[in-house]
Length: 215
Image (cartoon, rainbow, N blue to C red; front, side):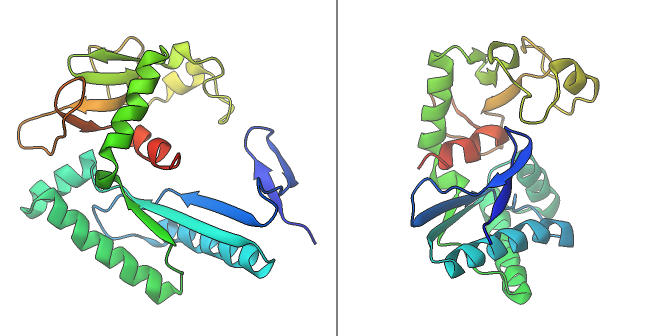
């Protein structure tokens, strides 16, 4: 019996066809480590571990990669609430996550990538989008321009008008479109930051996995 998967682009269930006949690479966006996971969070990792085990059983050589989002608005806010630095908070909840996964019998990834260890890759990815005209700088921030990317929303099956009606993207006066989202956030006092061509700052949530998956 062949494995069938849902193809988001085709919007249909299709036979699984690996890029390489004997190897499969899997990348799963891991937790944002600012608190304890709940059962809904754990479901994602359980399912992907099950898929990894099945593919291994079928004879594939599987490389399973997962990341920790360890720099994020939620981490900064929770660190303030708990009166610790962001690195300490992220380490605390990373360990808690690993303990929970072990208790559930979920296997560890082959490679664990922390967002803060790949900032240069994210800066390079943002630079590439700016050079291609898909992103723009404003006051030390860099935003992705949704109107410049043909087919934006195709995977979700929603138009820009539909997304704007229920938008959750934070407002910013420098945005060219309300749905444009931050790829790079200008540094604020008391927050972690790294150097970039646009000044000190930190990556936006959307660019982190996009950059790391390319490695």
